Length: 554
Image (tube, rainbow, N blue to C red; front, side):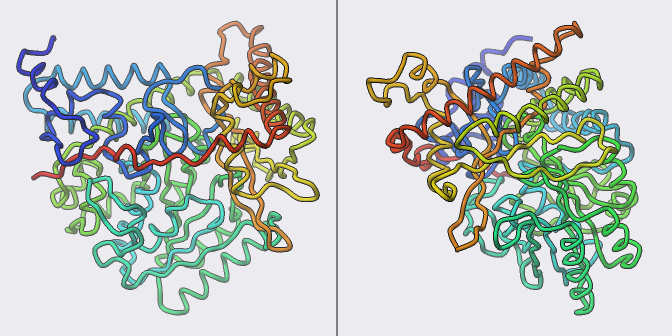
């Protein structure tokens, strides 16, 4: 069905969506440019700078020329996913009248599609604009089932998203909510923070080394025991895959807590990196754990799209409650929650979040494509890269690989690591966060013209190569000087791009990926030889393009 003249006129007269003072009625958003829709309905992290990229160096349209190994942070949308988002938007437009009903039906189809991809049954799925928003959703659900006197214990507090320090206490994590409301970052959300405590448990020692697993288990057990002794209930947020790919606490620790503290602790698995096999994910749900996921980390969907997986018994209990959604009105819409949760849905705004929906459409395409690959290829590819990448890092005179945490054999292809953090040597120490950030930004820019005249043509071409990797992560260091690690990340799209139906081509295609990694490391080595070039990578000002927001209407 083609657009009517009225629809075409609507599209033409819609003001630019980046102007929040001229936001059109919500139904007119469908006719906005797709690039603008893909950054709509989220917080300020989606805002674009003057170069058309967000804070994480990602653009809302494909950028095929970049070597992309950044999935621990965020990824630019792929051409295939971009086409899927465009098609999904057109399909919704062509349904004509009854857009409320049509949108509601599309979101329920997404729930079924996500459940199908992850092989889930009877699981409550709550969509959100990001994994950070999902943490707020979990806190809200925990208050419903445990009561309001809560303590959130965060395992891996030093390796989770920066917004977690706010969400775990029921506070605004950005200056603008996904619903478009301007708020004070760090201020309480709807009275939530009056009686919410937080305890952080680090995965790193004061010297920046990985803490032993039994030491972390002991710290978690002690924190739970102390908070319950104070008459509080506990939300225990565990780390399934940290920024470095680490897991904590152990399964034994979690099983002991569940057995000894029924009704007093709700375990939440932070699997937002999605570096987890489906059987392991389902096992968490079967044990009563809530699981946080995203489509925008390992799977490479556009930033940001989150979801909360609620185990069937808990989902049924929430569905039967006569409870409103106070505190979530600026962070969720009616259709984010399952259709059976009628009382909750009735109190939320009936405003479609087209941006969130389209980002999930793109992410689901990436998930389906990945899971369609033969399991043997997935295992073979990840195992090969897990051996090759540390060797490439070790071959550089400037890089130092960080240790990999062991992963269980029960995790299918995810038994192989997919995040490879490394430090950058500097004299007797390592680069700090500021210097590592300069290097990170330089990798994503064409800097051939900034090199001196005496470099070779090959070196100048290397400096022009766009390389997108995981952002620097600060670590403590003996003596008080902090250091920072960058990350090379293998994501689903690495494998889908390397796949061939000809098994004989598998090894060559995987070898091509290692050559791309080698190119990135060579560019790092080149830039470190000419440190003055890094001064061309001043921080970008992101206030240049306000974040796109939907207007909340009844």
